[in-house]
Image 1 (tube, rainbow, N blue to C red):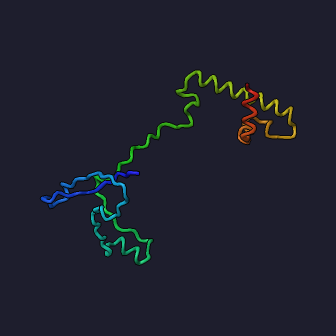
Image 2 (spheres, rainbow, N blue to C red; image 1 turned 30 degrees about the vertical axis):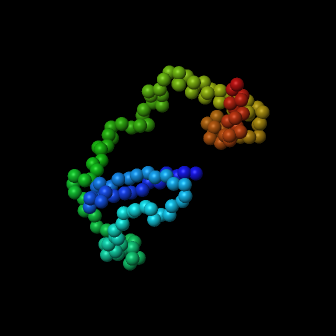
Image 3 (tube, rainbow, N blue to C red; image 1 turned 45 degrees about the horizontal axis):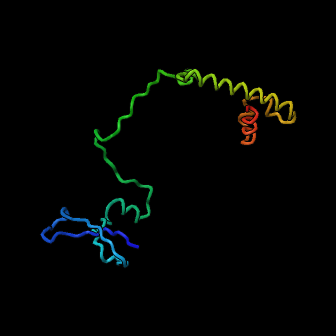
Amino acid sequence: MKRSRRQRTRKPESDSGEDDIIAATSSDSEQGDATYETDLTELEDVSSPRKRLRHEGNLALEPEVSYDAGELYEDPLDEGGVDLSEIPEDFDKAPGTIERRERIESRWKRYCVSQVRNRPNEPKWREAEEALRQASNNNIYRFLRWCL
């Protein structure tokens, strides 16, 4: 099975990494990682304030951060004049959606009445809203079958 490998090659006249060329090679045999050139990573300064805090074990202190006034996000002004509870529930809904919702609500209420007759020992069916809150997956499945 042939595998395509990516390999970095450098032009001999190039001193900087800007003129790197990446070539794809295929081989039948597995080649070791020695065929890959990787960039050396630079060691981080262990004496940085953040590293010192970790080494000292004092994580409660946070490094001091200074912000330029232009860098900070400006929060939008609060539009306090609108109370969301005053917006009607049917605001900006299609008439068909409203009719279907009302139809399903009336069917649920009729289903609850039928369940009170069939299961008088279960108090949850006496109130439609409470029955919906306590309804199990099985109850919803039976309701949908009842609607059909």
